[in-house]
Amino acid sequence: MSSFEWLLLIILSVLWGGSFFFVGIAVEALPPFTIVAIRVSVAAVALIAVVYLSGLRLPTSPTIWLAFFGLGIINNLIPFSLIVWGQTHISSGLASVLNATTPIFGVIAAHFLTRDEKATRLKLLGVSLGLIGVAIMIGKESLSGLGTNLYAQFAVLGASMSYALASIYGRRFGRLKIQPLVIATSQVTASSILFIPIALVVDTPFSLPMPGLNVWFALAGLALASTSLAYIIYFRILSTAGATNVLLVTLLIPVSAVLLGTLFLGEQLELQHYLGMVLIGSGLISIDGRIFRRFRKKHIIHPASLS
Image (tube, helix red, strand yellow):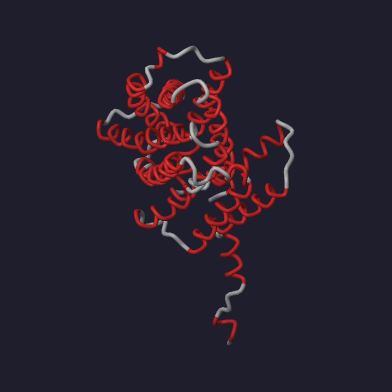
């Protein structure tokens, strides 16, 4: 990835890191399908407005829209529902650790389902180091629930697998030369069409008590920052850097969360945070591979130099 793509990945990690915080607030007052339906429908309205103000237009081909509904199912409907439901039974910290397994599933899936993103030893080493770093950074307190509420934990792991498959499936839209903004808008629009009826039938949200102002602010942050803006960036990275690279964001999310807490909440960095960041950084360097390639080039002995 280029330096600009790494910057976008860091920004995306901040936006998606906030989603665990926003969901943690919302699940105290609203059921899972209602949260997700509000998230994608508000995001869809906002993105449609941005698309038309930008002079762009949404696709009209039924075939392309069918593909967007497929993407909405595996990139929104399945993982959003599983993570939100999982967070009603396990902590946000444990959910984020389990979510950090996404690059592992991504590397494996990309190896078998693509021609140009094969697994390498450096990639496997990198995602392993990153996952260990995430676990250390989150701390043993968050991991204390590991092994209990297994259904909720498997739900979050299922979401990670779904995200990995979605990143590979989503590459097709870049090959069709569809703008990242249009892809993001079409995906969440399709997802909202799918989610709203499910939420109305399963959760009957109109029978629930009115949530407090803090819940509405959390839903706004979830929809506008962690969904609308985040997916524009996500599809921009996916179109140029590929499925495996865009999934690295899940390793950076805990780093963003810890640094934001230090900057804005006065939280203190501890040894485990520094150690976790070093391991995550080492993992990302391994996956990027540039340093190793440069080192290899410097130490190659060319036949001409021996004559």
